[in-house]
Length: 76
Image (cartoon, rainbow, N blue to C red):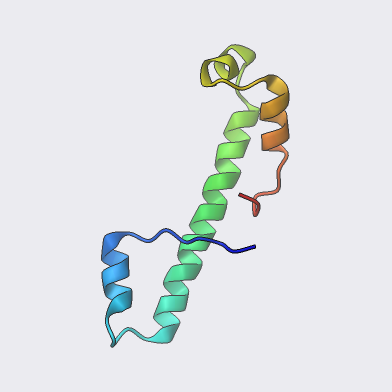
């Protein structure tokens, strides 16, 4: 499985400079990955707390919401 990292325009510009140390590039990519994981976790926790009428508003059944909220955070 391949993980896709999303970087801001400024971060890409800094990483594309030839003088950027390899360790800095790795640190930025790691930070983006950790942020992605944390966002998934908090989003799934929030989904688990939604009421049935709120789930209906977003087009999900309670079972779909339960299934999604039970997924492990490292899976997209």
